[in-house]
Figure 1 (cartoon, helix red, strand yellow):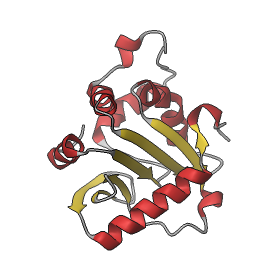
Figure 2: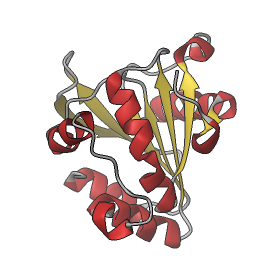
Figure 3: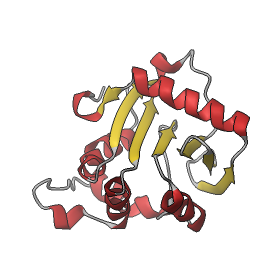
Figure 4: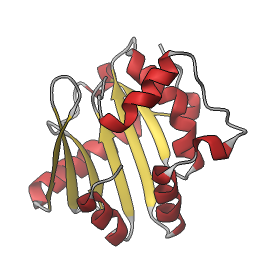
Length: 173
């Protein structure tokens, strides 16, 4: 679930919200149950939207309906982790809500100047850093509008985006 800082940033966003994810495993509390269910064989039925639609997807749909372009790139190691398989399997829900999602194999990102943490950047100005522990658990957030950091994040995202494969074309390896 988004934090209040995130809620404020996305609510005040006027043009774009982009997200760069660079970890192969996340262990955030709200995904523990769904990940366990997925490992047990559960898969969302794309035809049964009510069974998988959730508050995050409402937020994304509302944001996109305001004219905000929402894009996400996931930089992943190949072969992918079990967690990345879980993410890939459920990403059709993000796309249904209006997010544009692409996947970039880590080998193709070697020469991109990347920040040290995952981030969202809103209107190429406000950065919402996501901090994680080594085990993938959340260590909190940080928000900044530092111009140098914003430039680094915007450039890193755009370079990754230009090299990444759209979700519907990315084959899990």
